View 1 (cartoon, rainbow, N blue to C red):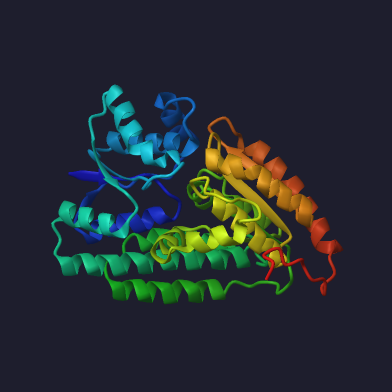
View 2: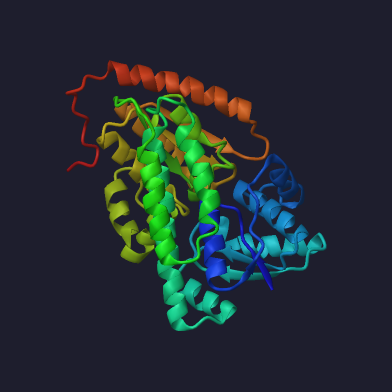
Amino acid sequence: MKITFPYWGNYTVVFELLAKKLNLEVVPPEKTSAKTIEKGAKIAPEMYCFPLKVNLGNFLETIERGADTILMPTALGGSCRLRYYPLVQEKVLKENGKNVNFIIFDQSLVDIFSKLKKLSKASFFKMIEATIFTFKALSIIEKLERKAWYLRPREIEKGDADRVLLSTFKRMREIKSFSELLRFEREVLKELDQIRIERKKVPKVGIVGEIYTVSDHAVNFEIEKKLGNLGVEVHREMSLLYHLKKKIFFKDFFIQKKIKPYLESTVGGHGRDAIYEMLKYVKEGFDGVIQLLPAYCMPESTVRPILEKIHQETGIPFLSLSLDEQVGEAGIDTRIEAFVDVVENYFKRRQPHKNHENVFGN
């Protein structure tokens, strides 16, 4: 059995490490490219959302390299079409002569744990070890990303942070033990701390939207890097660990209470999160908010007018970018650059002592 999975930004390294930790033969997906997207879009249902098309392209490329089993997450229910992804993808691949097995996870930690245990035939203690290792690796990935958000707009030699990260994620694929992982974390953080920066206040922009689109640099045209190089500090609440913690601690209940003046019920996906996060960024005095969503994503399309309303009420600059296979990088760059001009003007106009309206009503 040769397993594979969708490419998902920097998290791809962690999924590969987990598979190796469980002694599974893995064919890791290569970084999503324009060719990958073209392959997936060619065989995907036309009106389906963008991530499904990208995933299909990932699968086609790994199948060509020998993969025969696909690990694919699905949703527990609700309005997001992710719950149909594996079924649609399996059908489409078989119609195109690709007979592969799908192992579907429902996003509950118990289901993921039990299915990986059965697949790998690992002992209970081996699974516990692999779980702790994986969560630590995820936390390191997200810590390094947050560090880069701070460094990019301030580094004296542009590109230093990204050069370190590029080397880092290549090295990370070779880690085998927890002690190696801890040593790796210390070394990389020390390396990032040595980057020369100009300590200054810069505009801050929060990114909200659908989890895959906001956290996969390959499909969002490396927007965090682009903003950083334009002198903007990026923040993003939505991440894989945040998503998992929400499920463990039932945070959706508290999010719904906070956003009730704007939305009284769920809309599926991460629609509620986008509203909550934008309100949070306004409260914390950010200088702009960008929503990233896949084309045909109903939850994010539904909340976009609410985000526009918050923008009108508070005056905070807001940009919504819908991504699909038809979107070109040049057009995205133009819109980002124009938005950064607005953000910079907003940043300069505001007085340091100005208090922002507490939109949470606390």
